[in-house]
Amino acid sequence: MRLGWIRAGHGRWAALFFLHAMAMGMWFVPLSALLAGTGHDGLRPYAFAASAVAAFVSPLVFGAVADRHVSPVRVVRGLAVVTGVLILATTWWLGRGIGSVGAWIWIQAVALAMAPTFSLSTAAVLSQLTDSGREFGPIRAMATVGWMCGCWLTSAAGADGSVLSGYLCGAAWLLVGLYTWRLPEVPPPAVDPGRGWRARLGWDALGLLRDRDHRVVYLTAGLFSVSLAGLYPYTPPHLSDLGFRRLSAWMSLAQVSEVVALFLLGSLLVRWRLKWTMVLGLAAGALRLGLCAVDRPLPVLLGVALHGVAFACVMITAQVYVAERIGPGWRARAQALLTLLTMGLGSLIGYLGCGLWFAICAGGSGEADWTRFWSGLALWTVAVLVYFLGAYHGRRGGWRRAGPAEVAEPLKAGMPVSPGGAGG
Image (cartoon, rainbow, N blue to C red; front, top):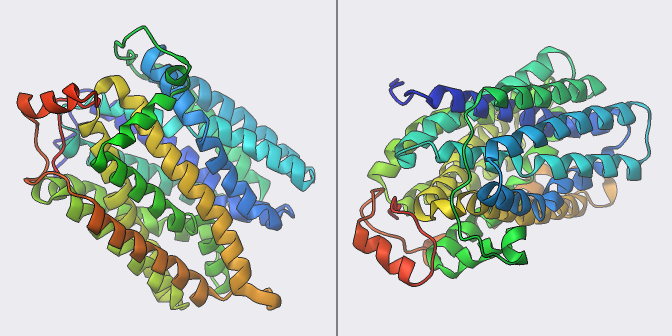
């Protein structure tokens, strides 16, 4: 496998992705088991929804700070330390038997600090690349490897379902903050000093949705996040019902396929239109949920593995699209808006909706009807695929650098784009 993408300076950013995603994985993947192990199983949909609630506020606000005032590296550093301290405190309180309301408040505080961090890291990394369509996939793959390693570390320590998983996670976030001291400062881009309250809060990024293709890509990613939200709250208990143990390690199968997909993504984006790359991801997502609906060990494991392909082809392609089609002065806010619509609106609907749908499927018996549950999410994903096929137009000819004339027209219309336009 070619590793020529590791150029001068790329390795340090790949390491940032590795450590950052490792810390995130050590929180999200074991969280369902941690809640069950500390007597808060009923809090599960609301605990996961906390990250979605936070994504409505934190990413755009901190994205605006990073775009206009402070290096995104510094913002990530401060938030990583705060996140680590809050996770350690939350875990301590969970271990002491705190009530459900108190537990949710602490989890919500963690989510508020954590929510903007990865979009800011992504914006910092993308600002250092000369050809994000080719270079970003392999570098982003290191985040997937880090997520896997975080899952393996949790299971290897026997921490699934215990407060030890939370303490390990808190330490990992403090390590992220420490590592950022090794990174060069990424200065915020120069912008017009005249700005109102909407710009200061980052809400001016909503203007990006006036462009049809921007709007379709953002909405597709957000709608796809609804069915994605069922993965971490409900796949671990499904695997447990099928007799699996060390659930965090089994869940890392999703990241194994994601690594492969990310290394191939650059080639796909060069050879295919963006439209067909995202269609592939949406189709893989529907198939993944259909396999889980079979409710047998091997199909469910195959479904978990397909998650990585679906995630890379939809969500990472959307991130690259944003980096290529939207100007540098909007970079952090554009990625933050994507976070708001995916981790925020999409995930909030997904976590709460999946919780309601799961209760409906269980009925009065209280026993999970996994076939019905996953089939419903598969039908939702098929509907998103149909929407994207009909609504997205894009540019023909694959990923390429836009010429001066192509850049001039959107600028005349007041739409923030970059000279590195992405093909459709």
